[in-house]
Amino acid sequence: MKAVILHGPDNYPNNYEVMDIPKSVCGDEEILLHMRAAALCGTDKRIFTGAKTKGVRKDSVVGHEICGEIAEVGKNVQGFSVGEHVSIANVIPCGHCPACLSGRENACMNRKAIGYEFNGGFEEYVLIPKICIESGNVVKLPEDVSFEAGALIEPLACCIRGLRNTGTGFNDTVLIIGAGPIGLMHLQLSLIAGAKKVIVSELDAEKREIAKKLGATRVVDSAKEDLAAIVAEETNGTGVDRIVMAIGITGLVNSALQLAKKGGTVCLFAGFPKGKTAEIDPSIIHYNELNVTGSTAYKRIDYLQAADMVKAHKIDLDAIVSARFTLDKFKEALDLHMSGKALKVVIVNQ
Ligand SMILES: [Zn+2]
Ligand SMILES: [Zn+2]
Image 1 (cartoon, rainbow, N blue to C red):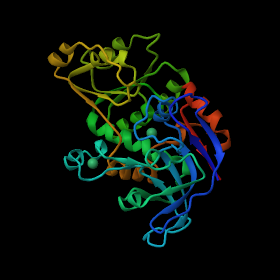
Image 2: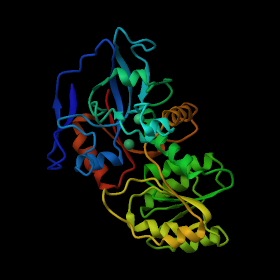
Image 3: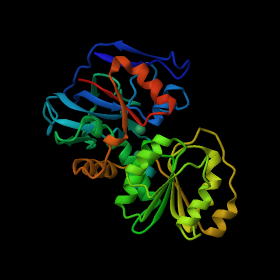
Image 4: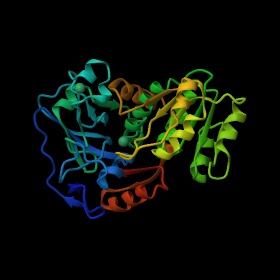
């Protein structure tokens, strides 16, 4: 079978290759998944370039946004059958660390994940280990959900976790900084949660256009327009209730803080480069009584709710897919993804 083997963190772009490897053998306690769609994520950029190494093994297969069709079911596995469409919640919490026990399984200190400790989605057949099946991380999907939308349940689940941390609700005015796939998911979720207005700031004209189509009240090109003035205009000078930073640029944090209203919440959703610090004026947080939060991964409940939304066709994920490639064209896919010009790039497999 074809697989993208990542040899190690160094020497990008010569650190991976598409190879023919023996098809995985399904053990008695495992499921063999015929991968049909696996999406590239911002995290993959960091993994392939060596900026993220935690949990990533040498000569392994990454890819953590996965959907497919069950090809084989181990003889001791109950409740699944060949041919069923499933998506995979790739993060498997341990259930007993202090983070898990305090209700933050998304921040589990011993988490294992498909695409990290276990081989991931950039291969034709993915072995789903026992621990993943037993943890309820294999989610069945009806046939009217596309494999691509199924793969995007994973980032959607992360955004649902972020929405909860941001606290967006009825009548809120929300500012989303960055209209990549994550920003566009946050836009739709904010509207579903009851936001009155969603302002989206994005430098790329095409992405702004998609944000408009997906319901943004106002899109702003902050290179040419004064975002602070627009926020003031849209909020009668009070600032926005909620801010989601969907782009990991440390230099934008301080200016974002200034746009929140008193008592507002700023969610640093995007990952920032490791070790990079941001200069902020703490008085903004102090006098305005701001809540500043982050968001990492998702809880299984977020994943299940994301799957429910997709099954009920309550969210447009197809609008977020800009290109599809097969495994042999993985290099082109990754190059496009790295360029930052595309929204979601999905690896598809027949
Ligand atoms: Zn991801
Ligand atoms: Zn844990």
